[in-house]
Length: 357
View 1: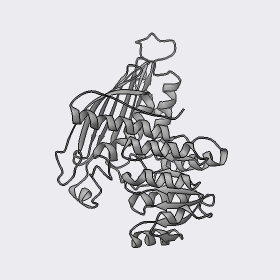
View 2: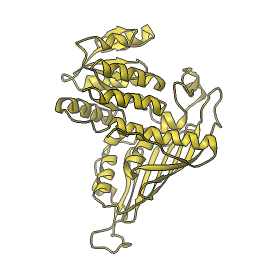
View 3: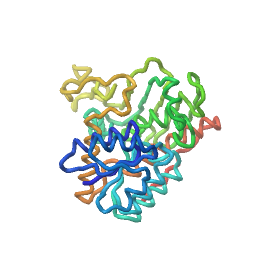
View 4: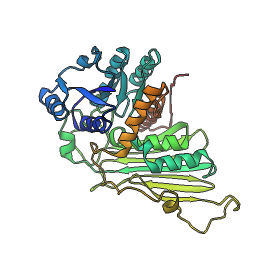
């Protein structure tokens, strides 16, 4: 699988590392970035060619797949161009910053034969896989609620480092769209179809940005379950991302990508009876990696990144849909769009999702 990377910033380097880890089954052929020195530096480090235009990747027969790692507001235009050129596409989160743009990507994928996935690597964490499987098997019973919190810190220097950071046009939002979207995706993946949102946002710890540095929301799901969402880059010095899922037969907590609590009632217990061990996490997932640093480096390479890349390549080879589809990405984006609309209007708003048949 021969790759081009569009965008040679922090996250572009993560994608390059993933492609190298998949060798010899994957090769980085081209790096494109509008800043020539940045493209050249990354390309040189990986033995690839450099270009200043993304279009350089779309017309080449020796490129099979394109990784899009530009600022978020440019994702859709590049993804559509790549798909229309017959290239497979892996897009960094989010799919784009508006639902209209995201739907253009879905339409482009539908009219071609190429595979597209959007990065949501935390679905591939062992903790996330175990909890999702337990939900699907009914081990947590009827789901009743979920709590998703991303309490991170980003300095003013972080926002000042790029004029696109904290902008509506290219970042699409602040703490929720950029940092919180992975945990939003996990919450929706666990609890099901979101239908209504009530939210508030604020910018309390940063200057010279258009967007929020804190967002809070209540989400109602089609099943009746309720979710609480909290995302901020104004929580000094930064804590871990945390997800709680609760049902009438069990509960699970993922903190810093690790399963820290898991409890389900035994099969022969009464509806409210507990087993002897109130925390079964060490038994059901005994071998977990180290806890990542609080507010971890967005460019850090994890095994979950590699797992998503492997799934992407296997989906192409096997002619199947990837584990994270364009519809999944649209669903997470729709929740965030509803949060922003609710915060703007001060009213509860429906989550509007248009997915393909």
